[in-house]
Image 1: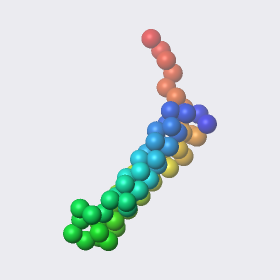
Image 2: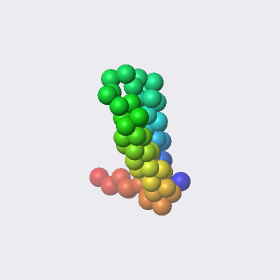
Image 3: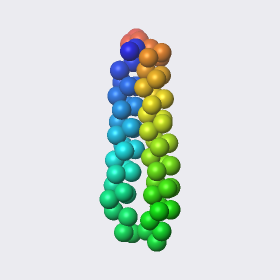
Image 4: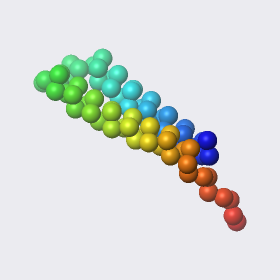
Length: 69
């Protein structure tokens, strides 16, 4: 792994997507149509987790910037 910060950011995004879906899965009482709300929240959470997976994949190829001062 060439860039651990990028991998950590990816893991945080995956956790955020899962947490978002989990929260709305357990608290659907504010929606008029809970099935539609879960569909939309699932798409958003999936997109967030997908970006996280892309960041983890990029962390194997992108080097950390060198510190030049």
